[in-house]
Image (cartoon, rainbow, N blue to C red; front, side):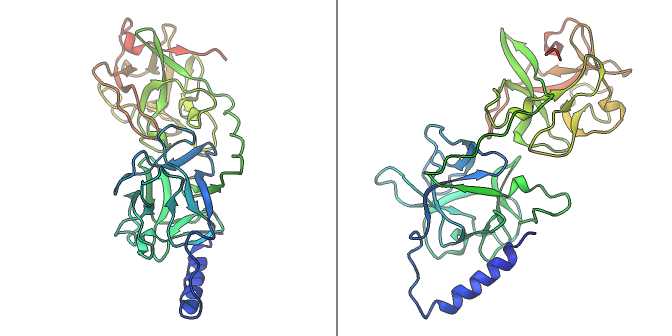
Length: 338
């Protein structure tokens, strides 16, 4: 069960009752110095910043990434501040800051700010069920298609909830990270070749959900945490093309051409698996992905699109629906054998 509301109330009551009786412990005395914050389903991924300035937004990336400040002074329970640790001399003190609107529960990009111990937007509580919540507000540290942000806290056991978005491990510097999860079984990459370089079909933005767009990007290796976003289950001939089973979601998502099956230029997307015409596809002998028994529409790499850098990863080109053309290289893909 999700317990942070009760825990926070008790903790805050206890804190107020003893404030006048005993001196407060220095905020960082009880902390895990130089710990990393890692999503519970992505043990090799850390959150941090690439610059030290008021308003610098957090992002997630490989923990050993160069120029990535991702060590924090943080511990279970009440944290007067969550401060970046191990910074170069003279860098100042920088703290996790939820902003002034932290009571609304709306999605707000999470940033760092100069440390001001005692201001409510910099006071955090790490709960028994691994949420990092703003004390006195309705905001929890979250990760999703919008990057790293705060949003309304939700129960890990709630129907439809995704605990991977709001649950975090505190990994101390002396503690080895948990081993990475095994790569998903049954998945294969779908490749498109650009000027002799292989690109892979992917779900964009590092998040699964209805309407999430599809693009092509550099091909991920198995050790990368976002490898599952390029892993597809399919067959040659009549098929659905769906994301392979993975640790990010329990829902099966498939490539979906949308409701306007005869319309050119519609962004290709994924949707929850249904037995509908928009998801009934056919991989042809000349390696096109077409709507089966449909109006002649194929998966098409948008020629005029350009690279779009983003977090947690970008894309090389957008992918759309377009009238099938046998010799069009933007519609020809490579499929791994089973």
